[in-house]
Image 1 (spheres, rainbow, N blue to C red):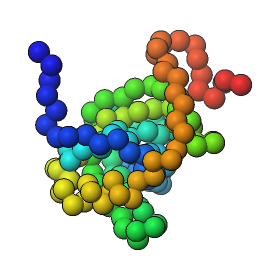
Image 2: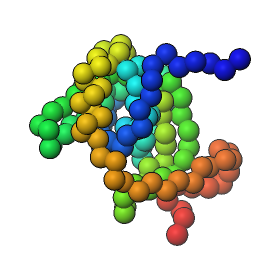
Image 3: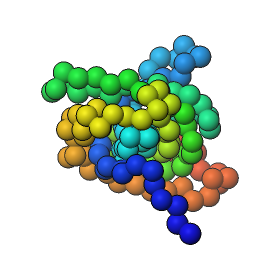
Image 4: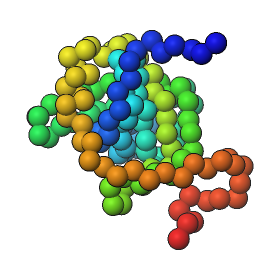
Length: 139
């Protein structure tokens, strides 16, 4: 029997920064896609441990708005994607929102309104995780 989603999902491409709470490694860049009131898909170049708590910050310069969300990584996929002309991501993470536990409808609407839908995305799924492929070794 197929599992029903608790919240409706919305497709978007929105730049975001994220960081780890306990390490002083600074913020890292990524993209939020496939968002709902309960979570999102984070695409980034950096590796994140499973079940790790992260802070996501979504800013919109055009609307002068910012959102800070706390989530926990619930799943990971190795995938190479290129956004625009040069932004490359290696990983996709399912992030379950913890604080707030659910986005309010009006906050989700504002994030969707601030998103940029004009990125070109190319992807190449890495099927064999234990292969000898090294990220960055493709010419």
